[in-house]
Image 1 (spheres, rainbow, N blue to C red):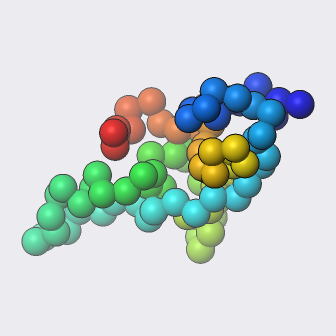
Image 2 (image 1 turned 135 degrees about the vertical axis):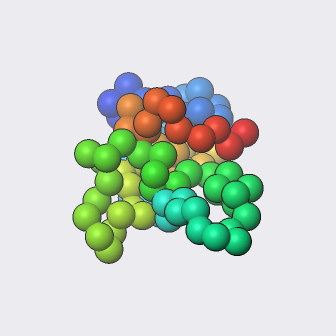
Amino acid sequence: MPIHSEICPVCGESSALRPKLLLIDEAWVPAPGKDSRLAYFADLRVDDVQFQNVRDRPLEQFIDGFYCDRCNKGFVSEEVLKEGRRRYR
């Protein structure tokens, strides 16, 4: 049975999905001497998530997502991400 009509972005199936709490990278904060290329050195950062979907400190790096048991990949719904977020791939 599909979960919230989500499909796996890898295999395109919904039958092997289950809810999963995922750990994502911390928000990018520029600082003097910090290499700006590192802002893109992550799969997903806290500052790519819509504010209302970010947990309170110290749990802001945990987000509700999905896990595909067929592909062994975790992902979050596009609905919780910012429209103008960084693209990593």
